[in-house]
Length: 509
Image 1: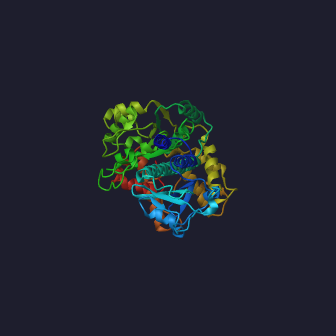
Image 2: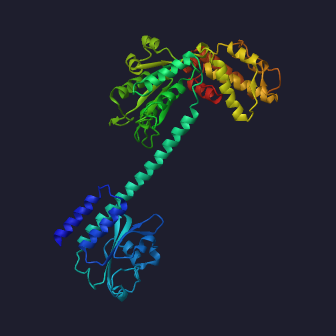
Image 3: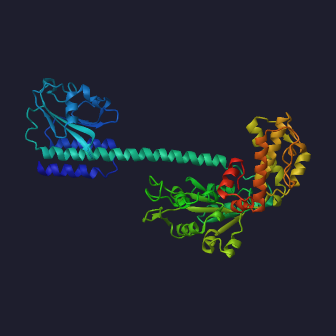
């Protein structure tokens, strides 16, 4: 028997690290106990968070038991087993009702005379389940040493814990996968389309298709409002990583003092307020793509740390001495002239060359031959859909005037200008957007005067002030080549405050 018991113990221990289903592992455990102990029936229960005992495997009992849940208060023997950390024996004369009366499969079951043994299963002091043994032989369990029972109880508890943890991890992974897939679908739905028929936009599409399937770093350059983020989404969507997330990082909006933590994460206690460990953007993007927008705003210290991630594929959380490996494809965008900034020493040359493996220059709107009518039609369709006005149209003379503008804010400026004009037409109960609808309290792009235009009609003061603030921010960005820090200096205010104000007013870069 001793040799047989050792084999059973070994089999149970090996099952702890096997890929067997939970039901199979439960049953193997009960089958092993049946080989070692002189029992006619046995059952393994899990103690759930609702306070019930749920059978997960039985031997010598009707399978109907597996469909039941046992509330300990109504089954004194089960409750006694739960409350004791030592094996509990019930002899044949025990007056406590047997929870398995009528479900024993033994031919002698109708005699209802048998011995019972039970033990509670604990992990780190927490009750996880119980094990029960029944025998038709009086005194069958008297000769069994407690240490033998406790050994099997420990293995049974380990089995329950192991299976419970695996189930929890699978459930968490399933939930996370669902969340990730949802976020990816939402991101794709918000990407928009790359609209245009010009040779310039077709060349841009070809460049994206050329590099997308590789893992090369991509540096997207272009003026503010040309659609650099749209290009980044397109690169990711056409890559082999498109089933993983693309994590967006606006380098200009990284909070001072916390920028390193945002990118690379931190451990608990790394700095004041770090009450728990946190993964950074690069860890979240592992296996996918990270999009570093407004790359030129990244401080030199972080540029050095970013270079290490690119070169070695490893990072360190703030406050940790451990290195974490990540597999991330980097797509970056800037409206700055990084070559010039490298010469001036404000941008690292080695980082620039690492990121500039495959540069993609997004053409400004004024150089896209014939794309304004197509874009106007696309953008106006969004307004029609949003306000449910299917017959809203743009007057041909207004379209000609749109084509004659230089659009320093590019597609974004065209969209905002056309949307404002459409709203004015809707307010006037007209379904035709005419030239005068571009000349309300905001002049059409390209014809701005140096002074704010005074309103011709009554408007709320707050709206007029916000409109002027918006115009000032757009003007400052245009004067600063789209750079928030330079625009803040131009307006003599803090960069962070300017960026937050711009976001609130719908100005982005």
